[in-house]
Image (tube, rainbow, N blue to C red):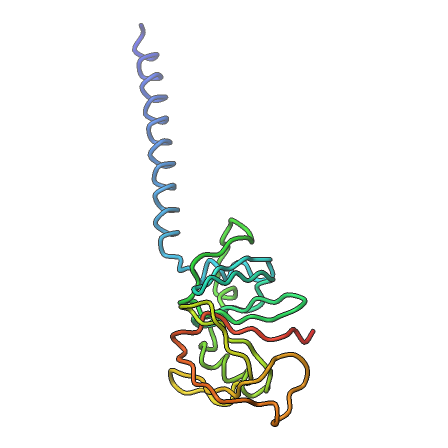
Length: 185
């Protein structure tokens, strides 16, 4: 075998080895970059996509992901709008397998407490699903404290009147699995 063939074969093997190292490095880089993605970031990449979300308390909600805030998300369907605190999500599925995430995708302006205050200000009847027992509370959120909500208890169908209020309830925010209101369009 001639020396030039030996050198040529060696160059081919060397180039092949370099290419494998580059590809392995690229895979490692992708894995390390993906390891930096938080679940809310991954979910924010699904804005506008249909999702199914299972929350503590054995509730499963389906709808289009409309908003992702600081510690919460909003699903919207033809019949209801649902706020779900990130801490109560057991799993979610749907949307795209890709996560094209950039600064404009991640919408983290309002905390879950502020989202609850917005519902309070809108005076929308809501159903609060509890995280532990699958039970729910219906009514209107009257006030939102640091770690609790106070609500007037009444049905959520139709327009309620003050004489239809049958009690008042305090619910710890930590035990809210989801907050559902009827869709307004």
